[in-house]
Picture 1 (cartoon, one colour):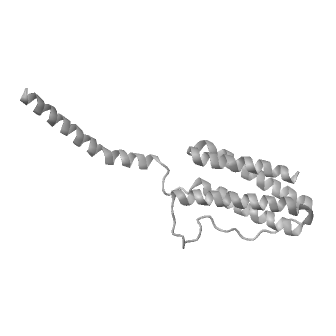
Picture 2 (cartoon, helix red, strand yellow; picture 1 turned 90 degrees about the vertical axis):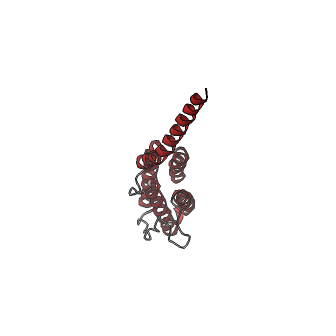
Picture 3 (cartoon, one colour; picture 1 turned 45 degrees about the vertical axis):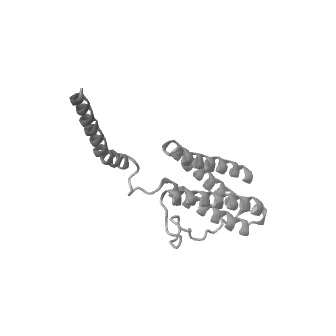
Length: 163
């Protein structure tokens, strides 16, 4: 009976050693199957668009007093979208607080000449942002999908603010 228990313990040790040997290989496979480090974070484009839309809305608010209330609301909401996505981007890829944000500040925007053209430009930007965020949802992990879905829904609501 003693030789039988020795045989079991040797097999047990070998199994454990095989398991430990397989862990690095499994970790490497998992890393290889996840998004490649060369690929930009899919939220970067959404965050950049949100910052750009916020600047456009601010320019429209300053140039067209009749659109100022709606445009300021849109600017505030789109800035909040950009901030939320920046926090999520930084959560997955932490950066030194001294470094600039990974989502650059866009160049200042100029409002279209007429209020109708300005409203249409802002509505089109919101439609583009809504569609881009909605297209990302199926391919994102649950939390990020919720964030992108919320941004998409918010953009649809913001379009209604313009009428």
